[in-house]
Length: 214
Image (cartoon, rainbow, N blue to C red):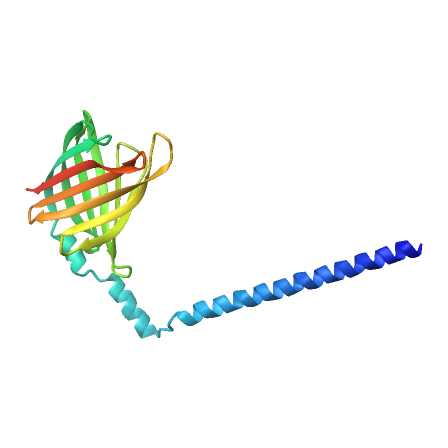
């Protein structure tokens, strides 16, 4: 009986000790969390209503990058070349792009129509410049699939080109694969768009479009 009582007392003490340790860990965790929240809050500047309004106005107002996009408004003839694999046979296609600015000159929208692999082709792209993040975002959808391509990047004034990077889903295996887009302003009436995909771990040029403004 004495041995049983001793065992019970030990179990109770262990339980109490564990409870204390758990409570201590919870207290430390809560303290750490509060510290993080305090640091995050302290890092954010407190703006008055006038400053907030000014920041939102700057975010919403089209600027020089949007003017660059607006310069492309019009109709473009597109000479398209495709490669399904590195050093593979080139496939050709043609399309016409109607480019316009939408939502008060804040975004560019392009609608493509043509033929590809003997089939009618339609596509739509949007281009945005985010005044807050100082970068471009492009999206593209077409009637040749059910996915959306999204890429982000910046414009280099020296090379007159925009490099955008994103991911796309390979319909052959359902896995994401990176791609890169290089968009170059050749002259006032010529644009070149190059797409680079990855196959077997190596990047290769999968598409080139030469655009000529009518």
